[in-house]
Length: 51
Image (cartoon, rainbow, N blue to C red; front, side, top):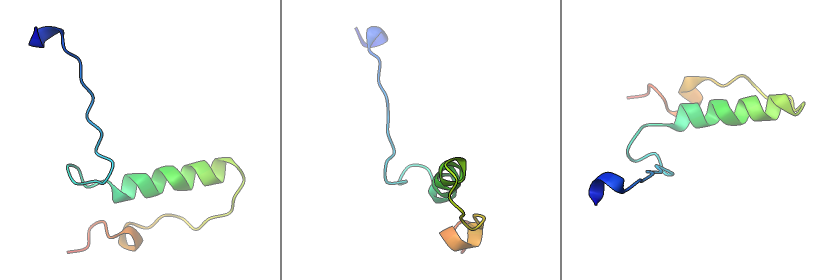
């Protein structure tokens, strides 16, 4: 029965995978696509790569 089961895992808070920068990049691309002027995403601004 378990072989027939399908599942999806959503990591909405970034606890399983460190995703702040990809989320920032996706928002940046979406805003630019619709004509908004936004600053380029910088990893240091989102905490990515900061120890």
